Amino acid sequence: MIYETIGVIGMVVICIAGLPQLVKTVKTKSVEDLSLPFFVMILVGASLLLVYSFYIEDLIYIIGNILTILITVLLIVCILRWHTSQ
Image (cartoon, rainbow, N blue to C red; front, top):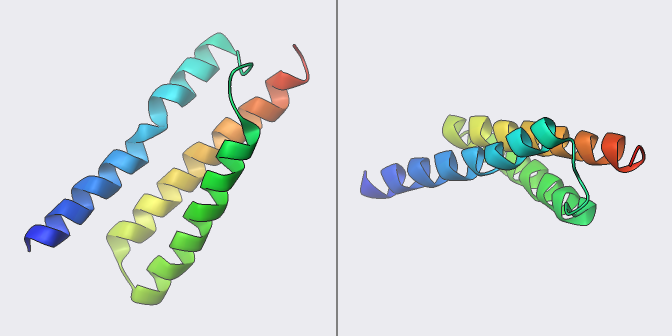
């Protein structure tokens, strides 16, 4: 039970880790210091983990990876949209 709790806490932290960056990016519309390759690698990793989460049928990790993918995709869209307009 303790390891499951640790896993859930870890997934929550990872899910919300991108939120401050997303909020700041949307507010400032500044993407100058953001690395597109970094976010693409996060997207690939989270997508692979999502496939694995479905394989092991773990709902917490499925939801967590979907949220991580969503935040990462939004950041990538911001980078692509605002990088060209600067």
